[in-house]
Each structure stands twice: as structure tokens, then as C-alpha cells.
Image 1: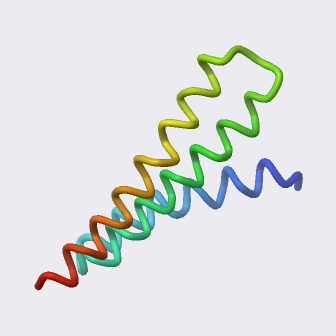
Image 2: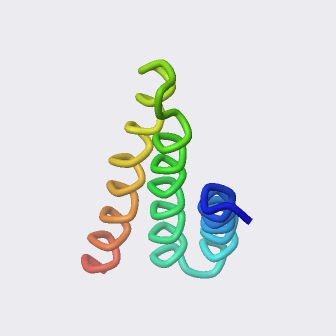
Length: 80
């Protein structure tokens, strides 16, 4: 199995796992989902090397958005 397939599979597992965990605990679910989105963005950037900048920009937008979701869930849990 190539490393890009492993990263893509890991990102998908984190996304689906984050949604499943969020049914029981929003803090951990949001954190796992955010990390999955950030990892999916890195996979997109890595896969789009040498292609158009538009394909890379989607991946670069996933990374900070996923990190923001993960950080927001941590801050939200700290305020409870």
C-alpha cells in the first residue's frame, strides 16, 4: 500500500470516526473531525503537486479550517 493511500484512508477514518465519536462526546468528536479535515487537506496538497494551483488551494483551505475546528473544540471544552 502506498503512503498516499494510507494517508487518504487515515483521513477518511478520522472524518467518519469524528462524526461517530461526536454522538457521545462533542469535545473528542470535534477534535478528531478537525484533525481528519486537516489531514485530508494535506493529502489533497500532496496529490495535486505539479497540477493546477486551484486543486492545491482546496487542500490548503482544508488544513487551516480543520485546525480551527480542532482548536475550537478544545477551547469550547475548556470553557465548560
